Amino acid sequence: MSAQANPQQAMRPFLPADAPVLTEIFRASVEELTGDDYSGAQQDAWASFADGEAFTQKLAGQLTLVATFAGSPVGFASLEDNKTIDMLYVHPAVARKGVGTMLCDALEKLAGARGTTRLTTDASDTARGFFEKRGYVAQQRNTVMCGGEWLANTTMTKDLTTDRSAP
Image (cartoon, rainbow, N blue to C red; front, side, top):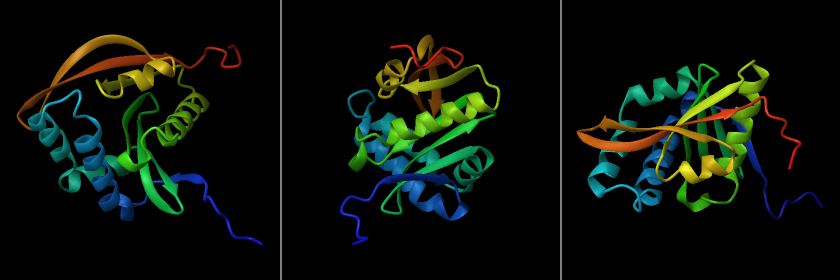
């Protein structure tokens, strides 16, 4: 029997045809997962970032990986200049099920293989705990203007040269 009862998560590179569904994942993630940390107006402003061709061009201009489940995209992450995790978003239906971890693991490995020794991200208040558990260390708090609203985040870094086999 070749049927698979529980299809596995997979990952692949971004394709331009992914843009509409990644836009929806981005918006759903912001709107449904960040409410404890950001106001409705801040969420609306943040979600509007995915409007238009600029979002698609940003995804295409970076190393963007798409997580899939049963062949359908459920999350994505992008690496800018092999040094910065710029975006990491998962659909709320798969939040806390390993999709973000899978994507982040892949970007860290790719960055390290390309000679990066220190990876940076500007983590939202919602994502900060996720990155802290992965060994990222807060460097500074930021406020950024987005769609007429101020949003807080934290610049965090991770040393990729640390021996990962240690407990």
